[in-house]
Image (tube, rainbow over all chains, first blue to last red; front, side, top):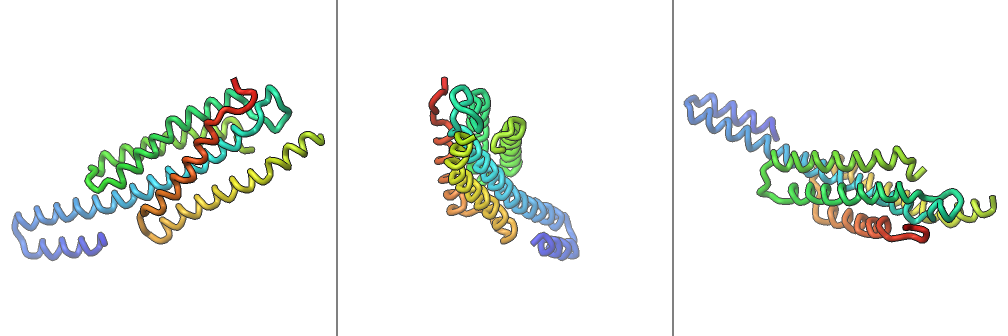
Length: 136
Length: 66
């Protein structure tokens, strides 16, 4: 698609004039916006799906009996608390990313910031899971 | 040892279920990229269903918690 926009821009430039340059810039902006939002949509989906996977692991861990009353395999209340903090942060962050990419009118630069924040929150959640060997 | 094996056996079905859910999530993301499309309503709803159920389970108080 970008290739077609490029060809169209070159054709306009061949016609000459300032209006042509303005039109070319507008077309380039539209093209880059379209590509960015598509990629952001996929990035938001990937972040939300990764979050879903980690929550499933956290749920399994929470349902193990606590180590204070059961032998291994068991769960630590301190780790469960960290996982719940991760859910409270990454859950709304990934939901916000979904909302911005689904909203057609969102400014792509704003959407990018929201999606990046969601990715960071999921990475933090993942680190809690890895550092504490949750899920094996 | 017997207690450990018993506990492990009771967890195996849950572990398999979790594995299937995670595998399914990976396949969903892969499909979006390989089919070169954006996520549609059905894709988002499927994710939300998994997340809502898992969040409730992860937040539910367990025996010995306090």
